Amino acid sequence: MSVAILGPTFQDLATNVNRNISSLSLIFVGRAFGFLSGSVIGGVLLDILNHFLLLGVSMLTTTVGLYLVPFCKTAVLLIVMMSVFGVSAGILDTGGNVLILAIWGDRGAPHMQALHFSFALGAFLAPLLAKLALGTTVSAENRTEDDSNHPALNQSSEADSESVLGVPGNMNLLWAYAVIGTYVFVVAVFFLALFLKKSSRQEKAKASAQRSRRAKYHNALLCLLFLFFFFYVGAEVTYGSYVFSFATTHAGMKESEAAGLNSIFWGTFAACRGLAIFFATCLQPGTMIVLSNIGSLASSLLLVLFDKSPVCLWIATSVYGASMATTFPSGVSWIEQYTTIHGKSAAFFVVGAALGEMAIPAIIGILQGQYPDLPVVLYTCLGASLATTVLFPVLYKLATSPLHAQRKGHRKSEDQKALLSSSELNDYEEDNEEEEAEKWNEMDFEVIEMNDTMRNSVIETSRSILTERLAEVSGQSHASTVVLQSPVNHLARNQAKRD
Image 1 (cartoon, rainbow, N blue to C red):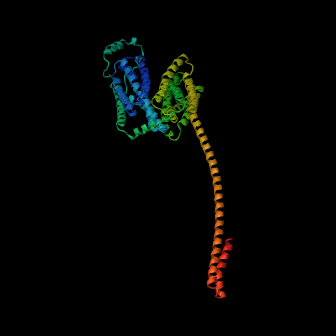
Image 2: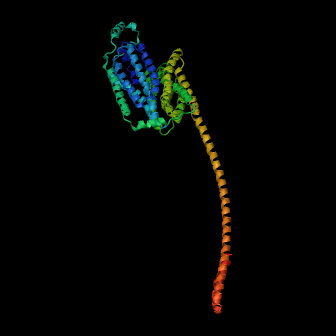
């Protein structure tokens, strides 16, 4: 909301500083350079300071900037204020992505989609808020003319040059920025409360930060991701910025139809980002990037082939907006699966996105002026889609090739261990069989020896008993002799059975 509020209030800010719109265009340049600086500064500070503290302070700075912007009475102060505001916005953009990755890691795809959907939702609500809050204001269309045609304006500008700050003449402008500033202040309080209270999420973020991993081609991945986001964001901003003028000048649409075409692009963009929160729970980030690349490539190709067909423009623009929606958050979630993204790494590809947002629309504006009969905007979108479609397989190859090598080596070592263990098991079983055979043979010999010993002892005992009994009862009857001989016969029969 704080970023998108500048567009619908730009004319009123120009009136507030007594300038025309053309002379105040440096405000966008100042904010863009501030955003780049903030992305770099945020990347460094995020590796040093607490994430909640840094984001809370940045949002407090944003709050102060939003409150002071309507009071700026000079163009220089307004540009400086917007540059400072851009610095805080750059820190928030980098810090938000890093914080999501620090808390949820490679499982944060739905949360990353929700973060970027909130940006699209705020950009959608800010013009509505400005329209409702501002109402009907004094038109600044006459400000686009040369200052030489308005001597009274020059005199008032010279008269007001001494006052740097002052109450704005349009109080609706003040209320629009004050409402958004108050909302940002409330969110900043929550961030500072999270910093003061050592919550479980903060501990989880620290634990996640400690379990860092680094891909073999970490630097190469970041450089390619820099180019990937450079082309993607550049094409997104270029089409969103120039589709209205392209539709009116090249396709011959009415202004109302061209405005609807512009709205449907951003409408499908925001709607698909909202749906991506749920898609991210069942689809991998890489799959979503592939689907987005296919959709953007097919729709941009249709736009180039049927650039003057109104039906094709409506359908292809809708598909193009939906396809572009999930690429950036999915890309951030995808790279976290293979290498840990810290503050400096996140700042690097955020800077790439910011440079694409600055450079590509500016270049296309110059080329479109030199070649008014060619759909340069559509050619740019097709070229950017081709670039992202080619870059992602290279990114995937660099990210996964070390993992495949490690898995193969690990699998090979496991196979070797399995073979060694199986051979050792066979040897062990053979040794056990030999030992058991020897044990059984020894047991057989022992049983045989034991049987022989028992037999000899039984025979000797029986003989001694018979000798003693015969000596004692030598004069007794034949029946007694038979009774005495019966044990001997019984023992003999048992011995025969054993033999």
